[in-house]
Length: 148
Image 1 (cartoon, rainbow, N blue to C red):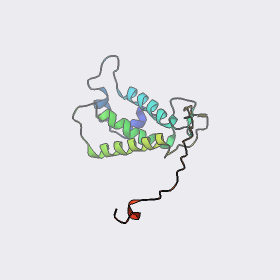
Image 2: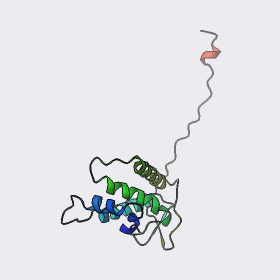
Image 3: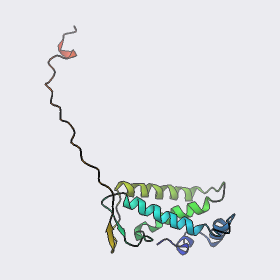
């Protein structure tokens, strides 16, 4: 589960306070919580998009081995809520985490099954037979015509 305390382990307290609450509204006093909830749903979507993967029956849990990459994305999303924020080291870590989750969606990287695993409900494509065309071999080609 992605929590504010987990995010605090990757950011300074001042960053979470300043970036998470600046220019916020009364209905959303701290934007860190919605960012973490949206990211959790997004990661579960990446995992669930491959038919071979399983998900936990608890929709707030992601695989523990994905937590560090998820927190890198969450940290970047919190920090970029302030216009013109720039930090190349954290941007690189975000890019690597984003590529990691793209690989998860493609099935290249697969999580371990959760203890309370539920099969992913990805619709399977219908296999359509492709036509097999058998043609005779060519009798005459350019190299067999003696320059004609």
